[in-house]
Image (tube, rainbow, N blue to C red; front, side, top):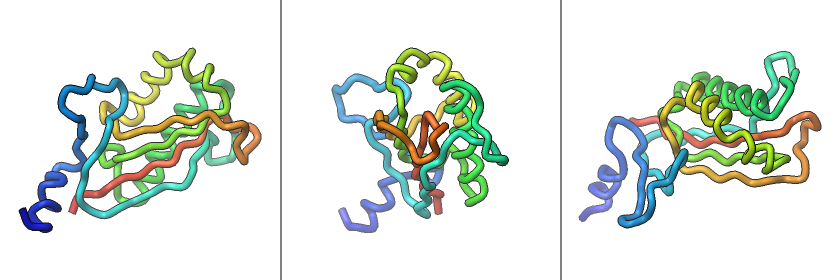
Amino acid sequence: MSIEALKQAAAGPEGPNAVHPPGWPQPRGYANGMKARGTFFVTGGLVGWDVEGRFPEGFVAQVRQTLENVVAVLRAGGSGPEHLVRMTWYVTDIEAYRNNLPDIGAAYRATIGKHFPAMALVQVVSLVERAAMVEIEATAVIPD
């Protein structure tokens, strides 16, 4: 197969596609891998503050606002959550994440939809913004 044919096979015009090795269990809420073709678009690390720099109270509220901020940056760049291929989450309290999975899932689906890119989540000691409990970096590919 030619290199061009391989590139075309990487993703259809509808956007990114999840990749899962045969026989592996189906992941819940993320993809093992993503393939896409188009314009590469990345966000910086986004936190859960509003346009006035205020953080909402609570972990889930900050997750929701952070996800809304990711979508706002994607939209400003001519993209949307359906183009996401990767998200890296940094949290200051892994137990807050684990203990709130149903509410986090609901916030995710309400903001991002039922599109689940490749993801990683890492607990960190602290974030640059002292009040931030979560920071998310996102990568999208806008189809040609």
